[in-house]
Image 1 (cartoon, one colour):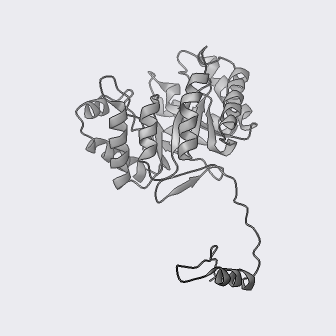
Image 2 (image 1 turned 60 degrees about the horizontal axis):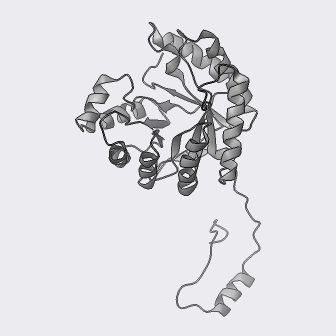
Image 3 (image 1 turned 45 degrees about the vertical axis):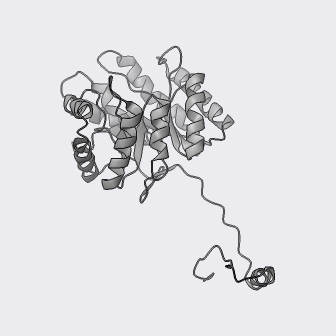
Length: 285
């Protein structure tokens, strides 16, 4: 059994200390295996490891800008979310973002229900996307696997609320490069916030491989210069030894020919080292 890879050998209720001692003395000495440190998220059956290729996160389970999804959530027609999840899975997404934040609904209860429901039909890892600590905690409690938690930011009160949940459930957390003063226009200041998040996470026992930094995409129609600062920030943050994420489609919000703009910006961000684009996987252009 040991030759075939068994790592733990023991005895049952019929064995004695002498038997265990003899077992130890007669087994070959095995070299201690040091686990490889890597950024990984998982469902109950599938693991996604960062660093080998670009990991695509499907954005379609988010009611922002989606009237049909907003109505489905308000009317508790969760089957529509399942259909959307299946479509993204079939389109090649590696991870699915799940956001149920809407005024007038119980986000804690809804998030719990949706997470449980999606896991019955989808094998992909899920990104738990909420600004409500209670909703994140409930989702993590019922999540089968290592969750991707979206998100914390540079505000101390936010980190103090979310980092204990990340540590408790062993998840990977996304850190947004904004703080009490909003989103800095310059890449160097977003870098500083990223560094603050990483250092604060370390005080909770959360290591770099369990942190992904979002350098934040702003709409090109309103902040053209800041878009290039985002690309620059991605390259700078990679030097901190963490992976990066961006909500790519934010760049084209409110503009015509969105697929072309998204594709162009995605190529630029990937060249800077983007690891996790949050996009519409059904847009094959």
